[in-house]
Amino acid sequence: MNMKDKATDAEQRLTDKVEIAIRLDSELLEQIHHLTNDPSKVIEVAIRQWLRGEIPRDDELTRTPRRTQVPPRGEWND
Image (cartoon, rainbow, N blue to C red; front, side, top):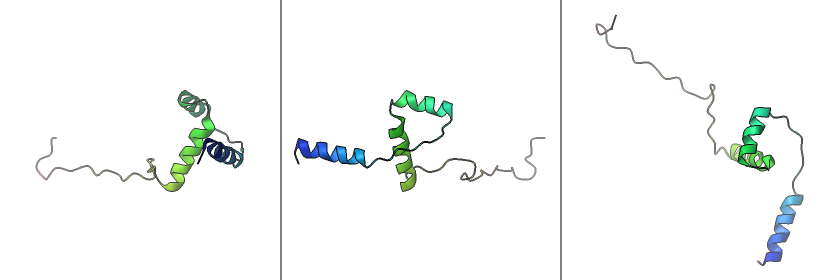
């Protein structure tokens, strides 16, 4: 594969892109701008990872509640 083929592949991927409008929290967008000047790339990578299940969800609905150990009878610290 030569340089011209690589350029053609990159152009093909660029033309396969679809532009959409999304609404994001302004603070979230500000954080993304600290990472890159191209927020669409960050969003695209995040969606790909999410679809592949690479990022485990970590929110209140997916956490297993931790049980608090209760001391045996007679060992209460009243």
